[in-house]
Image (cartoon, rainbow, N blue to C red; front, side, top):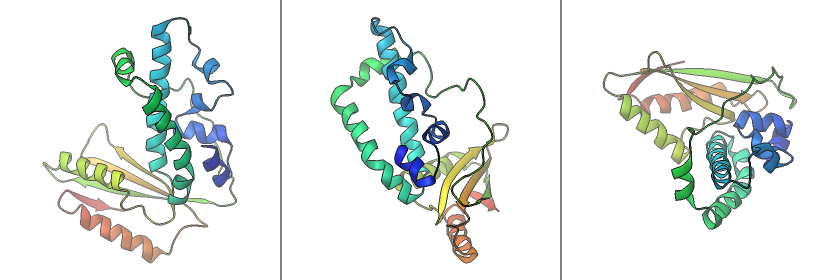
Length: 205
């Protein structure tokens, strides 16, 4: 995350909070986990937490701009290699007492983007066609895995499902104004995106 923070001109702690991975950026990971290391159960719980954070970071990297994601890949690959070599996944999964993720003790502070640019955003409203919810989810997941429809120049892309009405989905696209392409480029990407999902949803901007 440090290379991404440097690329964006932001503090490491700020980027770590955004990614949901503050614990692994602490000066002492052992102290941040705050466990009784003499207890096997607590050691396995701590390892489970670290593995959860690794999954969170992997998903976060997929939302980054291509150049930033490429910067993060070497460190991510090393973490995955260590996991593959040294971690007994079965024991950790059997122990985990809590769901994946992290609960904030307090909300993050307001902040201004400080990389010499302004941030622009666009919300894409997706209304799922009747009976197409599962197919839409599968398609969006496939797009993420295959890194399709990245919308040129975007620094972040998020997908939000309406808890009250799952047939409503919002896709938020975020650019730095210094890297935002011409409107014609954005509209062409949106047109292609709409066409890809035409049999599953109606899309508005």
